[in-house]
Length: 225
Image (cartoon, rainbow, N blue to C red; front, side):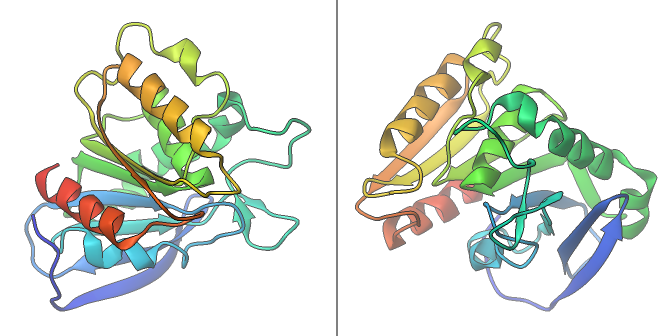
């Protein structure tokens, strides 16, 4: 699967209680499904910068977070009293995404979307949701990419039994990230490896974003996974 440009369409729709934007590739064959999860204060328009790096034959879905953020935009969990979210704080979002992807409405809107080829791409808070979704084993995954993200507190309690056995995971993080310290990313690598994942890690000289080298690595990762 390689990223390239060809005719495609975008749709804005609501399924269940989730508003999302979708890119439908042309053609009638089975389409791998990529769910792109935005960070704090983002929305369903925030993740399309990554679309050109993803396979051209994929169905891309960018859902909006469930909760309004006091800073504008949306979040995947309500406002917290503690500094870092715990995995249980993501439970409503995990359940909502699983219901969305398993629903009859999903099949109606995306009849060629192949959930057996489900991949997650999360940025910042969206990466934390992707980790939580995977470790809760909400639905089987083919691959996961976490960018400028962190493992929520409590996920280390879910690694017994290697629940992510051989799952390909790509993690990228900037050494100068002032929102999510680099130590959180390195901790995430260790936790995912303990859970059995096969982790590709791209650490780079940047802040809370990806540099060009990690963008290329992300594209290569999804070409092979």
